[in-house]
Image (cartoon, rainbow, N blue to C red; front, side):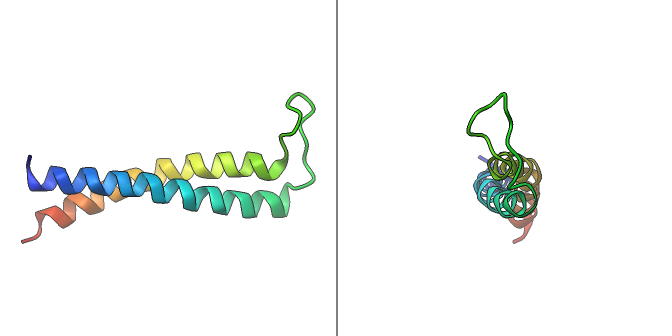
Length: 79
């Protein structure tokens, strides 16, 4: 396997996990601060901070995975 491809895959996986946890944490903090009062009647038990956690985790994955892959490919290209 090419060195750049290996570093890109490792960077993508690291970006996936770090983006998930960081995005979920920030979504929980922001959702709990601004949307803690919100409750959905169609989904019992789903409150605003839980929805913020899910949305933040999803956005963190979408942003951090390609970013980690790009950083890994750049890192693999250096000698």
